[in-house]
Image (cartoon, one colour):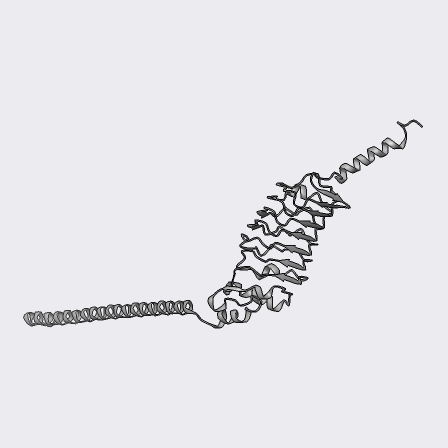
Amino acid sequence: MSPASGPGPRWLLFSFGMGLVSGSKCPNNCQCQAQEVVCTGRQLTEYPPDIPLNTRRLYLNDNKIPFLPAMSLGLLSDLVYLDCQNNLITEVMDYTFIGVFRLAYLDLSSNNLTVISPYSFSMLSNLVQLNISHNPHLLSLNKYTFANTSSLRHLDLRNTGLQILDHTAFQNLLTLHTLYLSGNPWKCNCSLLDFTIYLIVSHLNYPDEQNATCVEPMELVGWPITQVGNPLRYMCITHLDGLDYLFLLLIGFCIFSAGTVAAWLTGMCAVLYQNARRKSSEAEDEDEHGQRVEVSRRIFQSRTDSQQDGFPRLI
């Protein structure tokens, strides 16, 4: 058998094709070994190309990557571990993680996140641990942020700009076990009431409970957010503050003014009605008196005529 017709070239061609399919090439300045790609601290300014498609663990931490390209990241269908902490990522879009549905660990901490789109993590039904801490410009989370992440057990929200959270964002997190909330400027007003009640009834583990405290209002400053539910419920439901009394005063004044105006209008209508009835009655009396005078005049006239003619006249 000649070398050209032997199995060698065919095997090389097959191996080359499988290499293209599996993306076995390792990115520059990264280390690849056993389905693990480590690009830690390489001063990368963009998502590295040529990451093997069979990668299961990807370390991109401690770089200067500004965003995660959905097209490239979505090719890593076997990815279960993604570490992107300490980068320059500013936003996470709905389609960013659309292809990595097996992802179980995601670290986006210490970035410049300002926006997380409502359904950013909706495809990550196998996500177990999510870390978005140390993003001080992240001021809010949509109530659909954690939609479909039903396997989530550990959630880290420390040191962000979060002031208020919608409790409905957590209603489908039935397996959630650990929640970090410290270092946030929590505004413990009535808008946070439902979330604080959720923290009480959910019986989660709060490792940083004593450091997750309210910054306002003044009477609740320093209170742990996990313990403020009952005092806040008293303030919002049974207790009235100055604004509430002012509101009640305004409502009372409006009701009094409306009642006064209504009484005045009723009185005016009654007076006008009485005047109309009196004028109508006087007109009727005048008509009746005029008719009587006319009848009397005609009778008197007929009598006068009859006396002159010597014969009575019938009217």
